[in-house]
Image 1 (tube, helix red, strand yellow):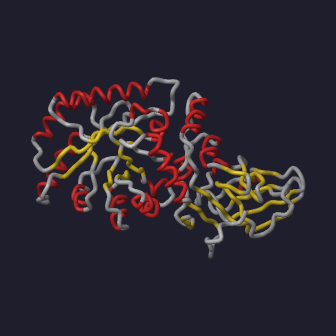
Image 2 (tube, one colour; image 1 turned 180 degrees about the horizontal axis):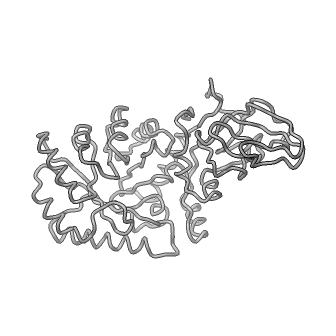
Image 3 (cartoon, rainbow, N blue to C red; image 1 turned 180 degrees about the vertical axis):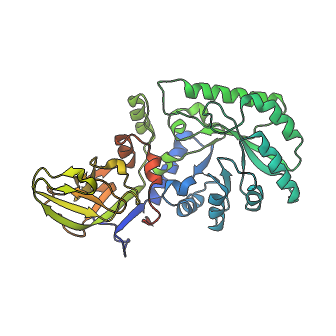
Amino acid sequence: MDMPKKIHISGRPVWVEVSLQAILKNLRTIRRHVGPKPEILAVVKSNAYGLGSVPVSKALQKAGVNWYGVTCANEGIELREAGIRKRILILTGFWPGEEKQLIQNNLTPTVTRMDDLRHLERAAKSMRVKSRVPFHLKINTGMNRLGISPSEIEAFAKNLAACSHIKLEGTFTHFASAEDFSARQTDDQEAQFQSSLTRMRELGVSPGIVHMANSGAICARPSTYADMIRPGAILYGYYQSFDPPDKGQEVRDRLPIEPSLSLRARIISLRELPAGQGVGYSAKFVTKRPSRIAVINAGYADGISRQRTNHGSALLHGKLVPLVGAISMDLTALDVTDVPEAALGDVITIYGTDGDAQIKVSDVAREINTVTSDLLCALGRRVARYYL
């Protein structure tokens, strides 16, 4: 299967196709699934999981998304400079010294440590803002990375009362294993979060916009929807690995989403080799028969994980062809012996659909024991991206 007619590649023949239509369809599916009440915060951190934060965010903004989640000030500023005017939440907090940048660019900071209040209040006061600067509070309920502890809520309420230039707009937590229904961790986290919210209200502090549901929770934990949800991987068409597996099938039936990514490259070399010949670094693959080896101009610097060395397949003319030899930085070899019509310039599909066959990023992630977002974020900057 060749690339869509609207795409014209010049130069290095490796590219990504991102279906904005699939992403918008997934957005509509998520909205139907959670109902009309919760606000949707689209997680577009790490360049929208490698797919391109600016074009993806622009499409989502046109579709009515009012909130975006990024990791740091620079990611938020990039969206502002591209014309995104909706709310942008800095999910992982800020480093002292970033406060003025956040305020100047109307980016919403997250307070993850008690000291953050002091830094944010000082910056807002020095900039003489006309209205209080809004922020969100993250509470650690068991992920044990970021967020104030439930035991610090009293101190937080006391310190917040002394701040006249900032205001609490939202409160959230993050689940460690929302897709795991064989353990109680998420139930325990949710209970601790609700207890923390209750304590805040008892102290006269309104938590504002309450949010906790990430992709896994959105799929199968409706009690976590609250005021806002934060879809990441599912927005781009990829499920988590649910435990037990039949829960995953239940989710796929109830929440049908569509993968948005294709990664393709053209064959730049074809070589006939006799049996007993090594291919690639350290001869990690040795031909067992007379073989036809194809090479594509894409490697681990482009997003083909080195963990796929001698492991897994790609698609050629709708057929699976194995990846052989060590995945190198710029090149990958494939055994196309069983596709005799293979020719220079033919399109190899690493992820995506070719005819009736499909390779999903999420399936490859399970094969090599990683997560989908790891592979999506591995897409190299030098890989051209085309938006369909």
